[in-house]
Length: 214
Image (tube, rainbow, N blue to C red; front, side, top):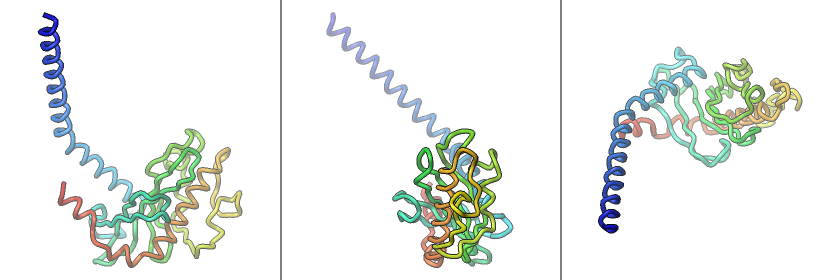
């Protein structure tokens, strides 16, 4: 009787597990397209925030290459989108990382012209302190817009620092580490973009491949 009961209970548990797994799989299959659409819209929204749509005529989110280089702040792959006008790459929109935020990595998206001028910057992910470090978000303050139309002249451009360090960018009251990290990361990203602009502009299209595999 005991063995029979154990077998019966085991069969019930197995059946329950199979049904649950099947249900989860079905939910994932049904929701995956919706999630993909939302991610696409979010990406397009960010791309449009850092670079005006009027500046390019290609589908920006479908034209990219992927770079893995610690100069961009981490050893993780970073996507570089190419903005084109009549086929010519007129700007790069680059993912990069500020590894020295107050609460860890700060992920960035920066649009950069060939001469080192920044079109715009957005923080895409961070864990900074609410009310202090989160002022990097445009809904919290307009600080992130202070990068627009600024140019990095060279690697030794001392203007690219917070004012506390003798630079031109404001720091936050009670929070200097976060803006310092973002300024440094954007500067490094601009320098990298200038040094590798032609290489990145002419690299194979990774986004087109990813799209065709979906």
